[in-house]
Image 1 (cartoon, one colour):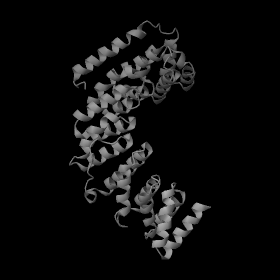
Image 2 (cartoon, one colour):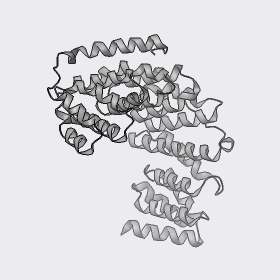
Image 3 (cartoon, rainbow, N blue to C red):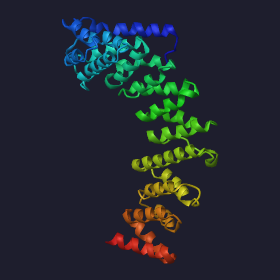
Length: 357
């Protein structure tokens, strides 16, 4: 991970200048001065006229436009930003666009300007940058003022090196930055982050532990070691909701991948809990997930939900059993019909009829 300090910034400036060598041979268009004069005039008509030709300007115009982002007049700032965006959008997602490299490099040089230009550059680079830009963005992770902008930009660059950088950052950055790094790793679904996330799940800091579980669930890769759940009642209400949402999301992903042993055990445990252990939506989500397992144990666990006090849970269980696939489900329902009575027996009879219809 590149370190901070002004000397690091100097290296960044030199690197940006080196990058710009590829664009240096471009000759600025003859009307660039007139174009910039129109933008900086503050006159709405002149700005609009200039905006119409923005994408035709030489990429070198990005630097003076960047300076206008801090202009005292709102119309000038707005005109400059719209022209910069038009230049960026002009290359689209075409990696073979001949202007892509030059435009990207000039936006990278804006990272050495004032904060306004830096923020704008990061957000624009998040749309157009590729792997070549990553080394020039990474140093800004060390700048507390620009950390969020830099990581927002990185997580949107489709390049394997981003995952490597973020995994390294998760291992060395202070705890205050770890939640955002974990979110970025989850966003790009970086499987190589899972071992580190599994370690963070063991943290005494419950917030970090819950966020680590959230990231693992979004990445959708099973940790090599079995993770022991935290003391649920020790979590705050918000942490409980986040944790259970993550657990259920993880179960769904494992089922999708065909790794059913873990979700089968987790969902079975959830559905065994008393009515007051979880909120209705947790039981309902667990029922829906369990219905994807199509085996006898899952069907039995869902059948037991027909006796819950909550109508919402009972109704979800009924609908899940009606739609659940597998011959094992029919066998479970027939057995349950013989061993129950009252309203539950009637409901199971109705479910069997609906499945046969």
